[in-house]
Image (cartoon, rainbow, N blue to C red):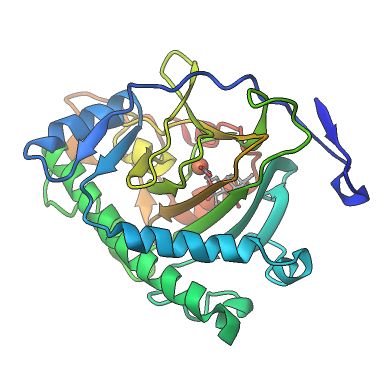
Length: 329
Ligand SMILES: C=C1C[C@]23C[C@@]1(O)CC[C@H]2[C@@]12CC[C@H](O)[C@@](C)(C(=O)O1)[C@H]2[C@@H]3C(=O)O
Ligand SMILES: O=C(O)CCC(=O)C(=O)O
Ligand SMILES: [Fe+2]
């Protein structure tokens, strides 16, 4: 354990993460311009629940533009940032994650981006004239994310051999589909001694939604857990997107796709900035294994539940908890 006590407010104890491992070279890479990628995509979801997407058609300028706005926001004086908080669950948060006692070396903005251009659900500070460039970058980025998740879910359905093509993508395509954007900043942690030392930025967890699309700057920190339980560090790539299979997609595929366990380590030297789009279904959507994916005599591993039921239950859990456990048959 390390006690961070630079100011009275920072008298918090964070678990020191193990030394970061060397870069993992096995992340599946899905080149969206490559014919026949559907089979690779399905294999990646089965084996890792995680893959990297290249040739995605989203201009790098759009990613860089939002990153610059996000860096600008996190560089504001603390009192200014606090005006966007607390995160309950939406808004600005600093070191506390969720409301059940999780902490990490991270500050963030969590935004509800469910309705089209962010309107009634957005935070008041985003409506202010001073936030207009951030708002515009967010709107453009979120529109690109909506398209990308639909495309990827359609390719998954093709790879799984199920129809119609939009059987998965329609779950995230409704105007009411529950989508969020998380902007995370992991500042360098000066209390750490040496470049090899690291600290938990965002503790291990799975994402509850269907799919998450992560983009970060060129600072490492993201780790995924492999089937054998070992943790590996994903090499950063600021021009690509990383996709996580979420708990809901694990359920829809009756466990064939793996909801990937992941976490982030902060380091002593470099800031990490990440932007994650979470695509979830509408509140009332019933989640259960898709009958088309069930083999002869295959039993459903999960009881049917609505997204609302799952989300409310997830928000009562700690990050590392096995949220799907209580929905197992
Ligand atoms: C500790 C928590 C934070 C979280 C809600 C929860 O109670 C359990 C799930 C967490 C998570 C992980 C993925 C996303 O970052 C997130 C926004 C989500 O939907 O589930 C967070 C939640 C959060 O930070 O509010
Ligand atoms: O910041 C990151 O790179 C990942 C964070 C994450 O997993 C999350 O916000 O759910
Ligand atoms: Fe996550």
